[in-house]
Length: 175
Image 1: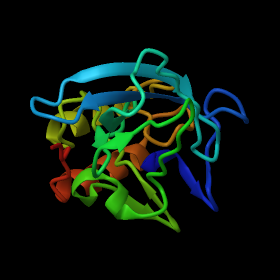
Image 2 (image 1 turned 180 degrees about the horizontal axis):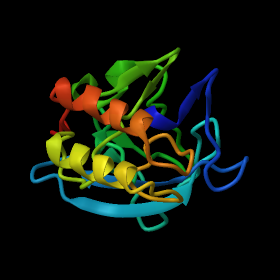
Image 3 (image 1 turned 30 degrees about the horizontal axis):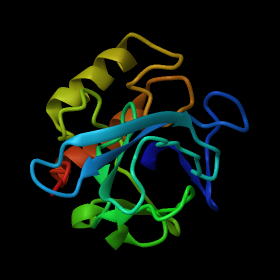
């Protein structure tokens, strides 16, 4: 998660020093209309790892993997992925082509999902900036969606991340 990334393969611990934040992983159909078939929400570690469970998802079926975070841009796997056992791994962080449309940002040596889609409409734009600016002006703190850095305070650093992404017209890229 771009705003949470501290470098050296670690993210800020929001919930506790050992847990950063919750992420939802969804499995989407490999064919149009790419419906979301399965979903699991869990906390991830400071290294960005998490274990997600899809007990009713049939093995051998191909799915797109979708990452969702409270203020991150929805990000899809670059291609479909098939679970052929009870365990599987997919790494979005090591190479930009692991995301559909190469839609991630390089932070140090890791690729991260973009931060700043506050209203979860698939685009980081002025409507997201307005929400951050409003909360920063009101000195809002705590576990809030407008805190892009995970430091429990909404301020100019959060605004700068979203503003940079909005200026670059960052939007979700999906199949």
